[in-house]
Image (cartoon, rainbow, N blue to C red):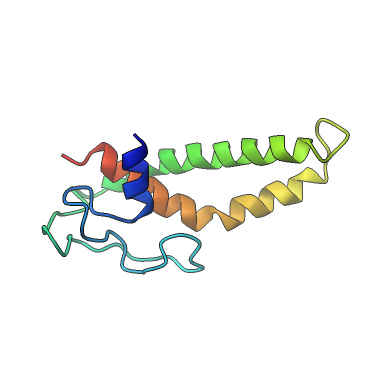
Length: 117
């Protein structure tokens, strides 16, 4: 499991682990939407198996977003006296916005690794 996460973070092809899935070298925290390669440069594996293949990655992205919101909430709970302080909302919203592109890319990588065969 940890090996799969490492390969996902390294933007490696799920088939050969040599080629790159996304065209940009900066995989995470890129301010623009990076395009995916259609095929792996090494093994010519097709990344999008069928039209609409990555619709399921939206659910993975949603789960990542919820996990990030909960983690941010619990960390912020250490710094605020009340259980839920309204001053937490802008911080949580900022975290969601900053990690949006990360979630899109990482959820697609997770989805491809789930259905790599």
